[in-house]
Amino acid sequence: MRQVRPARGRRVTKAYAVALALALAANAGAANDKHKEEDAETARQACLQIAARLASVRSSDCAGRGLRATGDYSVKGRPILEKIYPPVFPRKPQARVLLLGGIHGDELSSVSIVFKWMRILDKYHSGLFHWKVVPALNPDGLLRRNAQRTNANGVDLNRNFPTPDWKKRALGDYWIRRTGRSPRRYPGPAPLSEPEAYWLAKEIERFRPDVIVSVHAPYGVVDFDGPPHGPKRLGRLHLNLLGTYPGSLGNYAGVQMNIPVVTIELKHAGIMPKEREIRRIWVDLVRWIKRNIPKDTPPVYTGLQAYMKDLEDRKESRKN
Image (cartoon, rainbow, N blue to C red; front, side, top):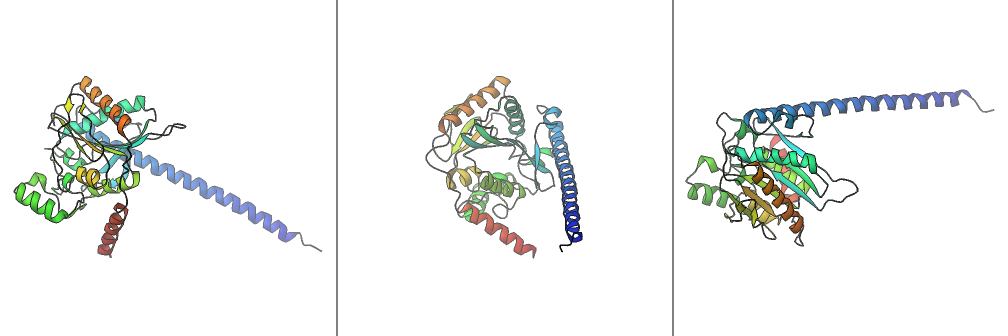
């Protein structure tokens, strides 16, 4: 005759297991919520530091607006911040756009204008593009008492990207012979030696942008690298190709990887354009991206993944 007791035991065990799973899930959910709150507070505090530094950035830009810490940090341990404007269901975005400000810490307007454009996106993001916005890639240079071009290690992040024959061309031909060892343009001891540049290279691999927009100052032009053809003008800024430097983001992403890189050079590093010009640059930029991106020439990501993996493996071997 079949025993009843073991069946009860199984039912009790099953009920206990279900209750335990629910309790663990609740604890995990609470821990995850706490982690998100901590990340949000980290981003808010970092943003408030930027707002205190720049008159055009408001403290309201830092609260509840979706600006978040990436989990990666500058040399001085400041979080690299980003803001995502994701696809809007059911619309499929036409392109992924990576927008960068503050690669050079002393180009204050390049950070301020990105915050201005984020306010526009906050109000009008339609899902036409999938945006990833990094307002200040070099927070250490920006937040020094006297802002500096380089990061806290004294490295020009816009010469720290891996391009062909980097040691000879970026370190030797360019920095030593062409600039006479200018401290403002030191490319670093090796490509991607700096955490800020390394993070950006990883993010390009992960996000796979169809176009990169990088804001600088003070040449007052539009520069361009990669296919197809750059915008002839954005607002009052006209296309004027400045050349492709070894170790630069334009060389790395535009030339080596076929990702169009639009470099917006504002007229002044410490003075913002007027509001009307800020809007005109933005409208012209969005219109150009809509008409030109993507094109038939796809970005080249093959080889980048292998390079990044090899770099990570070498870092791990040094740790061990």
